[in-house]
Image (cartoon, rainbow, N blue to C red):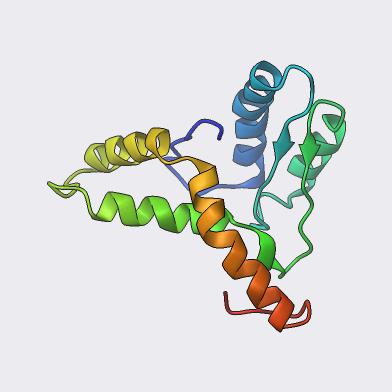
Length: 140
């Protein structure tokens, strides 16, 4: 998993581009120096912006980028990852009272929870739902 990036404002295509160039590229270059890294994102509007799409195409030789068709998140576990972290932070004791408490809780959870834990929980359920729907939309 890459670094957790704090946003203090709404994510736009330009802000997302700066995250990609400032954080993702260096992370992938260090962790996957053999260029075997794989990057996955959701279909949020900033992710599909022209500037972000162009940047990802320009860096396609540095790492793989999974492309998700619009409105088909059935096999994308990003929502499960977000939900898992939200539940961990909500169960913290004492609860987060300030934005800094919340950030600390998220950072602690981010470093403790491994994506394999989440995918082992989420993917079998998603695959079964997708098979039942014969590749169509699911409620996962």
